[in-house]
Image 1: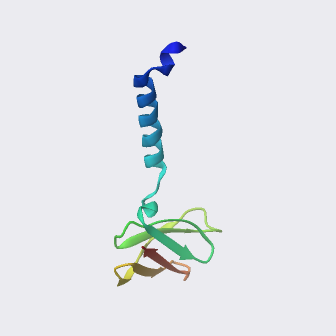
Image 2: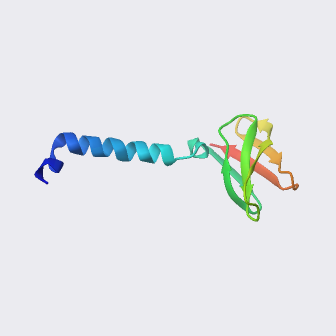
Image 3: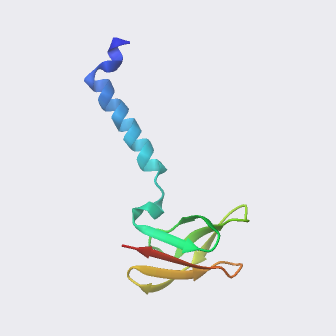
Length: 88
């Protein structure tokens, strides 16, 4: 197994690990954070819709957002739950 310690192998391994990490980071990690009552998961990247998944539901939905300012949007889910997404 001495061949596994080569610089080329180490570089390859680091590249694979970095790629896996980047693919695992959702769009919301790109600076947007959403909040809502019973929020289970979310995804928002600055567009006209946010994916909001509330606890108690098997899936989330894509909901329109209203731009409050450059760093804040708001919206309402189908069941009336209000959500806010903000960026730094």
